[in-house]
Length: 550
Image 1 (cartoon, rainbow, N blue to C red):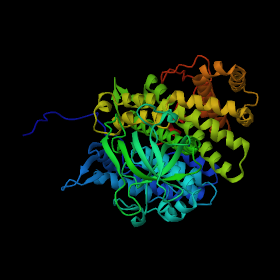
Image 2 (tube, rainbow, N blue to C red; image 1 turned 90 degrees about the vertical axis):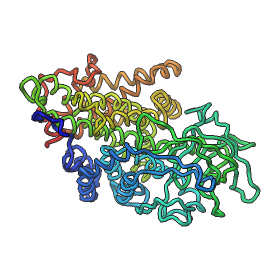
Image 3 (cartoon, one colour; image 1 turned 135 degrees about the horizontal axis):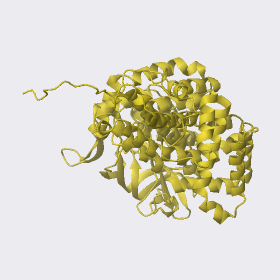
Image 4 (cartoon, helix red, strand yellow; image 1 turned 90 degrees about the horizontal axis):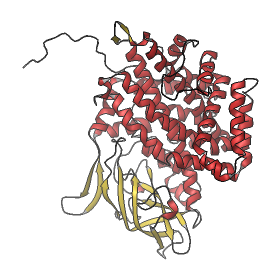
């Protein structure tokens, strides 16, 4: 039976079959600045693959056909397996095959961190759930490197670009994934409130059994997890907990259920119970919190880059749609109010790119020479950027979905998925208040770090009164008593990120973009609602063409 009796006009599909890398001028330029141009051909190929309609279809399927928990096999044996749609495995293999997980640690070439950031940013625009196990595995590598026995046993598997979905003991795998188990019901971000206990087995100095629970156990099908547990004679410690015991039997980490999440649906998150699970102590007893903070510093950078990618995808989709869709007699892109919205989104996108790529450089430079300035970028700016960019992604994915109107709200394309996905990065690895408190703690512990950061930014302030005023405002807040400064944490983090973005754009972006960002973001009257900017003096056409030339 045929229902359609009318001609369909003025309807346009979401953008597909385009090269995400080739159409992103700010990203390509940042890669060159970082000395990472050698990585561009691979990223260009990857950007073309990600942009294919087939890849978008895989992303849709992975989020539509969500993971399923199988607790027991046919004979009642406990298996705790999570089964995924084939699209999940295809996307996981696609990302792992790029060598991005291990690139910062297995590649000595200059610009490796920037190349990783670019690849992660591209993938996050199409499917973000698969980046959760990738993020945790990458962040675990530098921690495992400091454990000689563990590193020797699994170095090749951690660094391998091969994808191995088989559920087997570590020694039988071609490559492995490492997850995290930190939070518990009673504590959440307060990991010091954890009650899971670790007891020595007496069979080896670093061998323990763990008993307790985890409220969020990310990606339970990972081959191992880093877990925080308490010992009888010390504080929280960090343990390496494999999915299988060394004797080949399944480690008793029982999956109670999978989380029914707002977004991030392709990825499995779970609640688990440890029933004397085998674990290996990492680092010194009682030093689990510093170990986890180090790991979280890496994962927070991933959150920054991933959220920037979501904002980018929303902008490109919205701009491509507005250039085709007509309303009230003309194209959306030609209507003044829509032009204000799109321009605002484009400015945000370019500011995110320069900041995330500068952060990636800081991680590489700090590894190389331990520079105090790069340490300040890494330790102070990472949580500030996570606070701001991840929070902005929640708002801006809603705005880009609104460009499509009702079509954007219908859950048959990428816009709804972006909107559902955005909050996870703002919450995971510390919500907004936790990030701002982390910024304040970093400054309180090393006041010179904040000054080093502001001094570095001052190189681009020059005689610009707006930038100077923003810098002075931050310096004034730093003079407040600690209890007052904590209350100003969100304001300080927001202003710090905006100043950093403005200074970086002043240094690297075309004047049309830099001037527009400084004029809008550092204006005391800046309206936080997207599009509430005065575009009359802005080079709107140049800004939009640069954002996406398609």
